[in-house]
Length: 324
Image 1 (cartoon, rainbow, N blue to C red):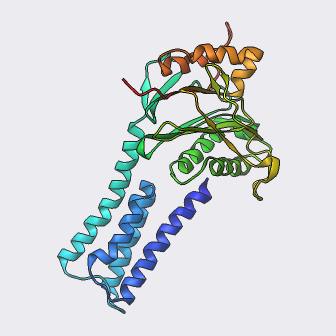
Image 2: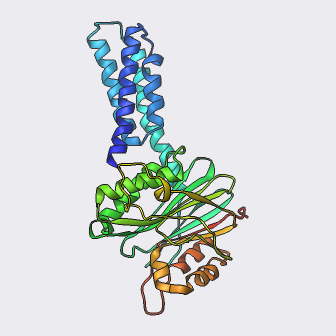
């Protein structure tokens, strides 16, 4: 997780440095030439990284003015003010873009022992129920144009299933899933590397789901139960749990992570804890729960255990029927 984030930041910093060198060599002194590329890089990366890129671009501008070995940025106050304003705006715009994306996720009313979040999913809505059972891993990332990516899983292993380990996995997913060009197999491979780095002896049973703006649903299963519909399992191909294969080499053959298309309008994804709790009845229990008209209520029902037991999560319900 951390290496990927640093690589992205380093790339942005290298691009900013190269742009300053090119502007100096080409004797371009206008603010547009010096801050356009850093600004574009800033609004496309995380806010903290954007702030660092803007600060570094500001340092390069200051150096070009203070040490004019080659022609650099214009020295008149108006030009310096324009560049300063543009560089300050880049991290602000990156923060606003991230905040708008997160604002799409709304917490729904639920009992105190379960948290239910609703969010857009293509033309419909999705609900993710979280109850923080042991090893529970859950993360939802709205993507541009109304799409959605969700991780539902259970971490196994002392160093992986504690709260620090599950949070690290969720942070990795948030960073990787926010990149629109990432495919589901690529997301799974990134998670596998993170799991291996965190706990070589642990593994993650997980399902990753993607909904695009048109309502097309794809999913990959990595050691987890099948994706369910009101009529039964959706038939998504199964793959190995994340962390059980070596991350240093690209998987081939039976270890390759593959996805499957789901065509139902109502879809549910549960963890291995759900199947362990309900045994052979899990398909019937899932089908009955997701027939509820309200995705949030259906997701909450899927976390219920047998009488006398605690809740088991996470659970995701997607309703692709157009809202209202």
